[in-house]
Image: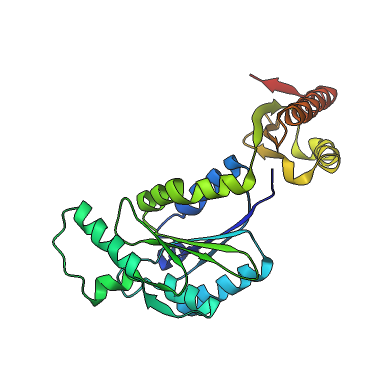
Length: 270
């Protein structure tokens, strides 16, 4: 199992104003985590070329394996993602013949009468040297860019959730899974009564310090108390490339948790 680091860059004024909840970043993060990847940062910027280009350059300096953008690929004046990416990478925007054919295919699939005017052709203008990806649901193609020498793969996805999800599952996630390789994960959560976060904190610190940090995740989530009795949901995720090692590490940690909760006079609610 290779460690694959991902950053997500969400583009849209509506995300910053609170009009729209950033469900795309949540969905992408969840799929990457379930596949064995690690999302290290999520950034949100508005529909501003300078903000987009700056965020792209900053991300590349951190050297993630993948930078995934969503939003801003359409034909309207505020769809500026590809322009911002091109500026950030010091590339020209060019009308790509393959992207034009993808537009034609998308319109034909939907039986839309159209004219490939300048407005629509905007969706086929992509950074020079990048690879357009067919949109199987909507119109605007996605774009894949391989940067050198940083070796960060940049993916530009539509902001419409159905379009983004279809392209990601069909064209992007298989690449990420291939890069990760063999991957196994065990995840569980338990509801604990009469033990507070502060009481359990030393135990969790010991567990984290004695296990591989990228392959062991443990987190407490307080949810409510009854008659001043603390209650927690304890989440445990163990992952790795070797199934037997993952199972052994999980069983050891789980047993330790149960023993320590009982020692602290806590109870586990079924």
